[in-house]
Image 1 (cartoon, rainbow, N blue to C red):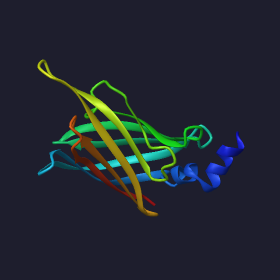
Image 2 (tube, helix red, strand yellow):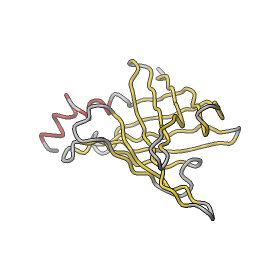
Image 3 (cartoon, helix red, strand yellow):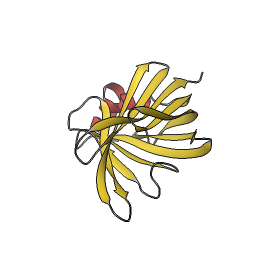
Image 4 (tube, rainbow, N blue to C red):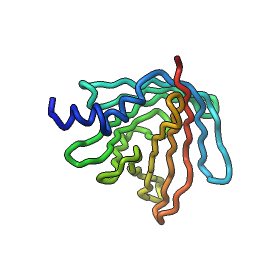
Length: 166
């Protein structure tokens, strides 16, 4: 293992990722329109370090309007690029797509920006999707995602407030 990775695991971004490790439960809220909360459902998830602490794998189950949702996200910090990165899939938001997101070089906050295609027979648009991960305290985690219209307007899409299970 490289010295840079070892240092990051003890004092840097990989240490911050390791703090996410554990079993979590909480609530996820979903908005399609910023003025109207569409759904609030329980969520449970686990986060575990993989590949000698290089990445953390987030697996979760939740729901929307009484229908089950399962998903996973792989979070990491690219030491060469100095950026947080994420690959995310789930059974509700992504259809059959994998969303790849990354942060800004040198940003110490765990936030990443990705995008997705909105396609109908009449329209094909590219939308942005910004995700932030914030440790509220040692036992609370807030994951918030924002839709970004093709015109650049941003609004909250999902908010997950997790409590660490002891």
